[in-house]
Length: 447
Image (cartoon, rainbow, N blue to C red; front, side, top):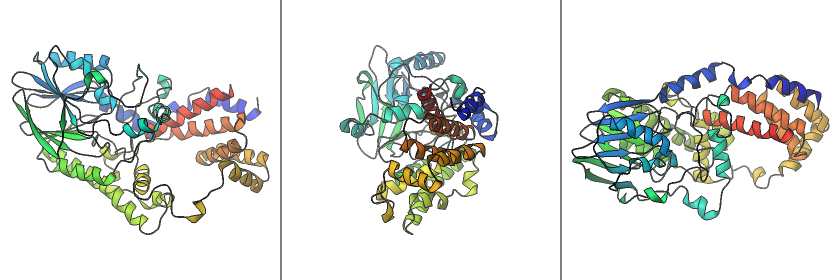
């Protein structure tokens, strides 16, 4: 073993990733959002938080109940149903899916009794996964597992930003729904009013995180069920696992529609509800303004000819928004949102003709190594960068070395060390999990 690899191995025998710092403290504090609790958000309206990775809500009607979203796994959903049964024994008359992600639909079987309830969803239900399935794209499953930290040991996971740590017991697509709980009724238009168990609800189309998103407005309780267009984090305008484009413009419009209701409670797809009319109004305004700002400022920069890399510096959330506790980048990140806006409008080409036909990673790396004075000096520079805690540069230099020699164990170790150190100071849970997951994969390859 190379002397540097040995030292790095010994250093990493202590959990650098677990060291207390501002980022880990902030992310650990966010975990209070997932303390298990059934919260009464209005008369006859309850939300179960923390039992599953997503919120599950119940509205109690005259002769039955309505369930909004069902959690990710049946085991978690059974626990939620047991808590709900302490409040009422009325049968489930309807289930409403705010969207098709499996962490909101996977627990459905726990809520279906002897009499099959109505199951409501948007007419585009499942549309996010369709192009991936049709195209035979499967690698998003690997990236999804990295983003969620599914292959990390428990001591390396703090949370998932807007959700507690869970290890799914089944494989398959990152988000999918089962045939047994397929929707029976669909929101076909912009909005519709339904009446179930004596409860009148409005379902409103609200594309944002997905194109099959809807929100539920309960005018009696003055409760908004926003799905994943709101949770206490900067929104995931782009998911690093890889998804079809999410329209940031439409997301902002949907937040505007949410704000048009005179709500006294706001239930997001994850994290604790927002209670109090004035608080709900402020939160929705700030959330809308943040998403709209990312869109508008990015377009402004695009129209100046800026590339995505330049836009990252140009598009900075104003402090009055960036400082809000519910807009911290625990799950999504403003930088990813700006890049997604650019790509959604203009595609992969950044406008710089140099990038029309770039050198291959190997060809570029060979030239960089030549500039450095050879691969040994490039390797020494990577060591120096790591020693100086210049971890992003160390990772990029390691990438050059790995492009030239993919199996180089020292380069893999340098990259693994750099990613681990980047994770240590990362408040974004999905990036943190991704860093640590890839670092773990690299170390396994060098054993």
